[in-house]
Image (cartoon, rainbow, N blue to C red):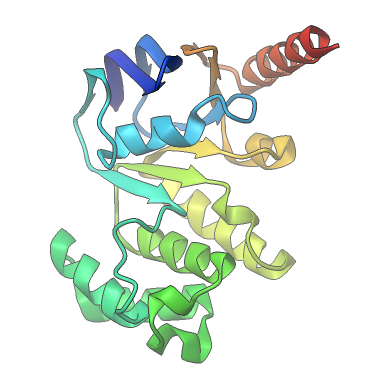
Length: 224
């Protein structure tokens, strides 16, 4: 379970003020894959980073009764001069898992070949996503944070990613960001829509998708 309590995030640049989260109170249930929906720039990735603890809110807090992964696809905790393998071993030690087993899993899953032994800073964005997704799937979390990563790679790799993700969902929950409604429908059973700093939770994924689509139509009409 992940609960947001009076969560607020405000960016200030000069006289400009942008509210990403406006006193949000919401609960993401345990063992439930929840789609986090919102238009581009709504603050979905920012909210994931706050939930993960890699970014601080302006006020309020995130409460959880279990472990939370880093946002998959976010590489801020990876050292650029270390190889992929060295980064995996380091993070495995931080989380107290069997590093040899973790390295074997990530090497097989990410399919990086010789690049696994090269500095992380040399990786393309797709390679970084493969490594971070594989690493997060290799460590058991109570809640996984996923940001567009299962769309990386060819059809076979995406199928493998979905398969591993669904296996983890048998015992864990997730908060998933994706622009693909097909993928959202395949992976998630519930949804939460972030719109103008407010978050609305829906037990039914179709209701969440419809609310998101409605917000997009309103935004498009406002621009006309």
